[in-house]
Image 1 (cartoon, rainbow, N blue to C red):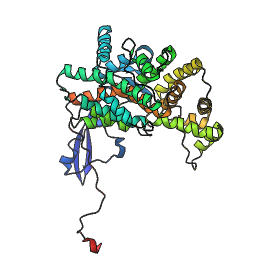
Image 2 (image 1 turned 90 degrees about the vertical axis):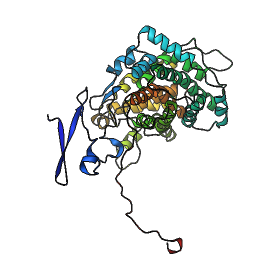
Image 3 (image 1 turned 30 degrees about the vertical axis):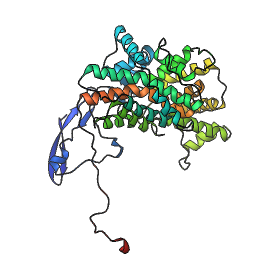
Image 4 (image 1 turned 180 degrees about the horizontal axis):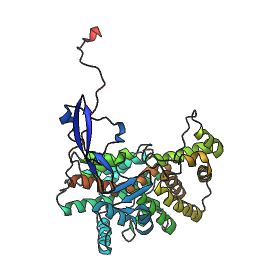
Length: 428
């Protein structure tokens, strides 16, 4: 194969180098396109065919259903690692030793106390505020209480910023839920593991002890691992492009949270439960809604099935389906919404229309089921997604800054009015 690509524009040929990644992906390097062609650009709405960066963090092959963090398969990590190991791997490039893991966790706990003035910001929100709006605001507010910028050339500064946000973010997540439910705010328990502490901060009632459930702990640990990174998606690209202006880590993360909020991205698991609620209110007939999903003239869309990247089974869904079954069995939850979800799952996995088109249940479908069974409100689902995605965002921000990537500045193809003369108001 040639190591260049040739583009002909207005009768003139221009050559551009081909770049090959470690997994043999090939890209055309068009950095010199505009300069060598006299202003010609590419146009790619949604950037579906455009690589915005080179990255060594996550490899994703949607056609083959492959997801790897730093070379490790998602299946092996979900089975053998805990969330903090995966966070360390994503951010620093290698799995931690026992000593590194223990220090990492201890340092995170030492930085976990959130300034008490943040409580005043939490109190200012009405209970009706969407948790993602609250979380984004609180994350941005951390900047005011941690004003010094990160010296990205200092490993110590970078490490301290990483453990600081990994310590404080779960507190913000828990406070967002407890504000919504009218419960007192908690600073956590440093004697617990990372995931156990998250659960206690979220669910402990003020008048009783909180008892950990290993099935729930393991399921949440897996969910956080599965959501930890996913290549250059909307929110990750947002974190990188905001960070490319040399905005701080907390500000960049706040922007990523806002991007994740949308129903086409992190809000998809919330959309799944809203769909299930609508089906229940209409009588709960899953066969009727499967037929509507197959009817091209019907605007109904089956949420939580298929994936815009994975053209096969979502590898994360295979893992979390097992955890979902374990959670439902352990909790013995009787819930018509979850019964409808199980009915849709069964029919989709057996219906040739869905099987032939590889429209399998995805990670959003199963994560929504687990969060509902755990008692997490629907509008908190995306907040839980953000908690899992946090180390991926940090890793991507850190990589972008260490690589000294230029500020993001996409071009556009102007399609507006050409030059025209100004008209006074009395002549318009």
